[in-house]
Every structure is written in C-alpha cells, then in structure tokens.
Amino acid sequence: MLFSQQKMYNLKHIKMKTNIFLLALIFLTKSYSYAAFEDYFLNKTMRIDYFHTGNYEFEYYSIDEVIEEPFWGGSLINLIDTFNYGKYKFEVYDAISNKLIYSRGYSTLFAEWQNTQEAKYTSRTFNETIIFPYPKKQVKIEFYSRNKKNKWEKKFEYFIDPYNYFIVKERRHTAKVYDIYISGASNNKLDIVIIPDGYTKDELNKFYNDCNRFANYLLNTSPFKENKNLINIRAIEVISTESGADIPGKDVWKNTALNTSFYTLGTERYLMSNAYKIVRDYASNTWYDQIYILVNTNQYGGGGIYNYYSVCTSDNKLANFVFIHEFGHSFAGLADEYYTSDVSVENFYPLDVEPWEPNITTLVDFKSKWENLLSKDIPVPTPDIMLYNGQIGVFEGAGYSAKGIYRPFRDCHMKSASYGNFCPVCKNAIIRMLKFYSD
Image (tube, rainbow, N blue to C red; front, top):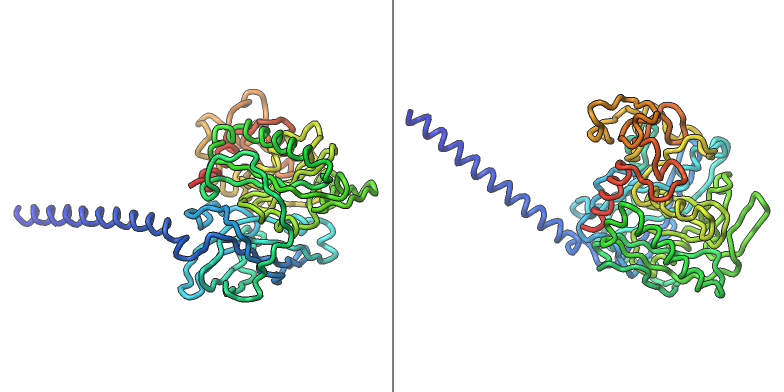
C-alpha cells in the first residue's frame, strides 16, 4: 500500500514537473519567436533577382543581382511559412548554424507557361524575384520546386554575405508614395501597394480617384470589410508616356512604365507585366506585402499569381469583380473554380495529385481541405442542384476542368463574375492569411 502511494506520488510529481517544463518551453518558444527577427535580421529588405529558365520538362536557376531595399513591410514574428502554398518556395538559413530563419511559398508566370503548348517546343527565360528581411550575417538560400506529384525538390542554393560590396544599393526607380487607407504600423498589417500603368502625367488625378474607388471595392467585400483594421493600402506615383496597355492581338502597342500587355500566354483577357524588375523597383519605395498593378483602360482583363502580383484594368464594367478575384489568387492562393472559359494552360492540375490551393480538390487528400466543414448529410461528390444551394459541398467542375476537380460551393467569387461573393471556404482561407500577416 505504501509502495503504491509512493509510486502514485512520484507519478504525479513527474507529471507536474513535465507540465511545468512544457509551459516553460512554450513560453521560451514564444519569446524566441519574438526575438528571432532582431537576432537575425535588420529592418529593411534583401531582394534577389534571378532568371528562371526551362521548358515543359526541365528548369534551372541563375542569379541576376542582389539588392538592398530600405523598407521591410512583413511580419517581425511570422517568419516561417505555415501554409505550404505555391508552386515554389525558398528557405533562408543562417549559414553558420544552418538554422531555418525565414521561408515563403510563391508561384510565378513561368510555372503557368510550362503548361502551355509553346513550352513543349522551346525554352524561355523569365525574370523572378524573392524578398526577405535583410540578414545580419551570411545566409544560405535554398530554392524548391514542386514536381509533378506536388512533392518539393531542391533546385538551387546560393550563399550571400550581407556586407558584399556588389549588393546593389542604388534607387533606380524612385517615386512619391501616397496613403490610401492606413490602419496602423506596417509590420503587423497586410500592406498593399497599388502601382499605376498607362497613366500619363495629366491622368494622375484619375489614378488617385481610381485608387480610392478600388480600395473601397476591397474594404467593402467580406471578409476584408470585417478585417479592415488589419489592412494598409498605399499608392506609388508612376507616370507613363502613353495611356493604356499593349494589345498584341490587335496590333496595339503603348509606351508605358510597367509594360503591361494583354494576350499573356496567348489569352486575350490575361493582362500581366513584362517588366517585373521595374515593378519591384517601384514597389520598394514603401512597405508592401502585396503588389497590385492598376492599368488605365476600359478593356476587360487582369491577372493574379500567388505572392507574385495582381493586375486589373481601371474602367471596365466588371472591374470591381476582377479586382477582388485576382487578389484572391495573389494574396490567399485561391484557385480558379471555373471550367468553361478558355485558358492557355493544359492539364494544369493532374487528377492523381491533390492541388496545393485551399479551395479545390481532386479528392486525393480531401482531409487536408474542407472535409471537416461538411454536414453529415452532404454526399461526396455533391450533385450541382438547387437542393444544395448555399451549402458547403464537393461540386464537380473547377480548376479549368469539368471532370475530376471539385469546388466547395455551387457559386463563388472565384468561379463567376459576381462581386463580393466569396464562399465560406474561400473566406476562411483569406482570414487565415490576414491573421498571418497581422500577428
């Protein structure tokens, strides 16, 4: 009896000490996460411009230049990516200890081009960029790409001495910055910078009026309107020689600052910039997490790629829808849910692989998506009929394919041209991302 009591006391004592140790460990971990930025980084940005070359079957990386930028708009706490989104990711390691100190996922136009017909017959090179807080000591950067099974493969690594005199410090494209909507300090807000293209000097007043209008589109759309206290929006004053954008399919060519062009990858409505380095140069005039290019034209079009940038036209009747839809791509990693419109990419989502985007599934790994949000009486797949209107389900047709890819709602802002219509799954994805930026 005495032995049993002593044993019980020892077990309780061990359990108590274990709990105290775990609490202390949690406290130390949280304290460390707050202190990690000051341990490893300065409050400014390091940018790496590199070339991404390849075709349908292969890819390789080569360094263009390393640049020092004066502002860091990202979190001082959430330094390690927790979402696992994007076609690519990079990881920053302290070179001495080999400790992971920063990481982010992202996608690029090169990734989309690899899935076009052109990529099967030729190779191309795209200029790409990553940014992270400016390191205090030497770092190692590792670049990863997903293979056809969505598994990460290391493609390239590069060591950087932050005191190397070849790091570019000149400011090549300086411009005035204007506050559109500011809710607080940049390091715990989502910072959006709007950059104009195709606005001449005489059209700058129009640009600022457009910025206010488009900021209201965002801030009056759920779930952004409920979280506007987590958002900052600024504008950069960039002057173009001519109004509008290139329209190659109609032999229209405009001399603009960011060289935006319709017919990207051969699709008329796809509007992107052919001057990504210049876009980044202008964005570096302020704090930013997300870049939005606003193009001065009434033609329908736009584009958005995760942690890359978004583009929208200023005066089309569907501009409010396009502005929010493209931001869903670039900010929250949301996939297109439509499947009837023409696109340039082919077989973009293999049916035997679970997509990384949070709002579509092939059912290969549905547990990682919105399975926990389904009601018990919802069939999987879910018939696309009025009975299930307004309910979270598994509706076939998404990701440019009518078969084998599923979306969570019958209709959504990521599916059809209806402004302010995010489904609950997309809203949850946006809120999670907003919280990540604002912690």
